[in-house]
Length: 98
Picture 1 (tube, rainbow, N blue to C red):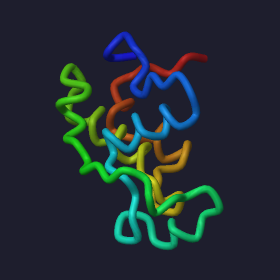
Picture 2 (cartoon, rainbow, N blue to C red):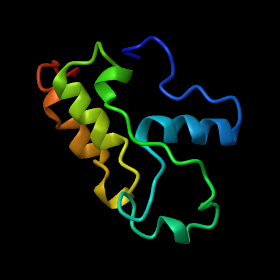
Picture 3 (tube, helix red, strand yellow):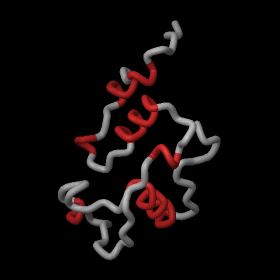
């Protein structure tokens, strides 16, 4: 929403996946242990290095970049939970709707 467009605007499943890889980097055993054991993971996927999210969403403030990076982690156990996200510093100045 900050960019006024989708972060990963793929037009097919594989295009979507590759757009994610181009930004987050192609997952590997270091970034996501046991990723190669996933049924649809292909070791032949093109390999991209991760990009700095600040270049992808330049209008997002540091707290927003921190939240986004925690939401976009490949490994589910390392990803921020919905509750943690709502309690993140990025939202601390919002007023609660009653």
